[in-house]
Image (cartoon, rainbow, N blue to C red; front, top):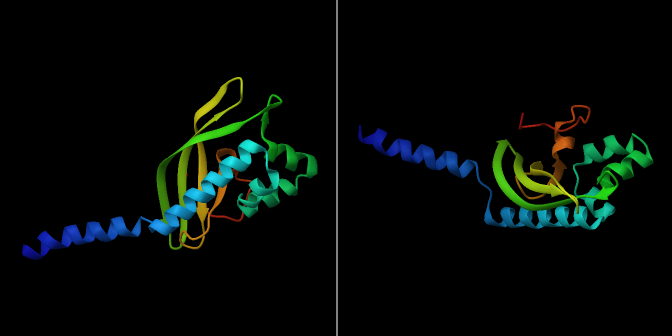
Length: 151
């Protein structure tokens, strides 16, 4: 009975610790997420593409230059779109693969498009480096080459 009393809290501590990232990794993620959102909002296509998961970049590049640029410019009815207020929702892991889901506000100067648009942060090295995918990219089953932990 005494062993059970201590085993459950110990097991819970291990589970919680295995689902977290270090403070340094969290800071790196927050910096990269801020850079991604800023690049999107400011139309800095090279930086935005550099922070996007490479398989998505390859997929859109293979569609041709005009579709590639149009996708990353992300215009809605000819208007510039913006992402703001990222809110952490959930994290899933599989070995060194870590994926985090955020909700962001997605809008144009004229209207809100979605106040719970998903943005995904992906790390293949245990949280040291992060790349990003927007909801439509993550859900696009035609984009292959990375494992989706969220269904």
